[in-house]
Length: 104
Length: 104
DNA sequence: TTGACATGCAACCAAATGATTGCATATTAG
DNA sequence: CTAATATGCAATCATTTGGTTGCATGTCAA
Image (cartoon, rainbow over all chains, first blue to last red; front, side):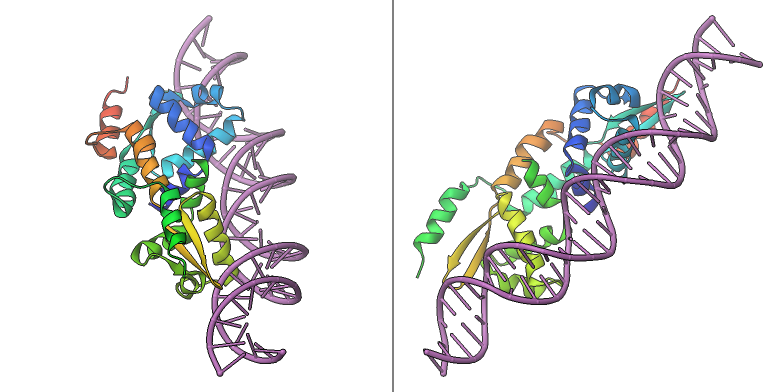
């Protein structure tokens, strides 16, 4: 669970997940083409995502396909978010206003 | 949105949210009592959480109360998670097995 | 087989992060 | 007023992180 949050913290990694969501099963080179950094940098990000179980990889000959795994993200929804709120929420501004009105 | 993910990436900050969820409106000193680090370190974490709009603070005399704001977490549920999956999900193990079976 | 292509591994480096210490400011209690 | 309490600000430091370069390995095609 900790690794999932860490993995999702980086914009590049979220972008990779976005790309895989748009087109699942892309190879490393295909993913690199969209990222403005070296192949090795992308490899590291993918390794972190895989370590967090956010994607699965399959070797196909000399290529490696990457598949999005939505399970851990779903877990966040069920554990974290449900933990704090299940119904509708008031905006923060309303919350803060009410609190300050109670000032002694 | 980026700041929310960054804020949630740290275990200490998630612990602070947990503590506020259990007992909302705690002061800085109350929160520090549970964290095994200096007050200033906790202050920094709280500042990051506040910057991500995950909590609201209210000055009460010389004390400062901290209130959990569940709105951004709810946003994740609606944007990210819904983006990738809305219904039930198969386990990763199943996914990976199926993919490898298709090997040419 | 041999060359081109796709990926893997490791050392290295700059910048961001988490935490500390020391001092300053503001409020409450006696 | 004065002392104790609660918090704020800033400099500093070690570690982690994101990125690079260079080389190695493995696979496909001619």
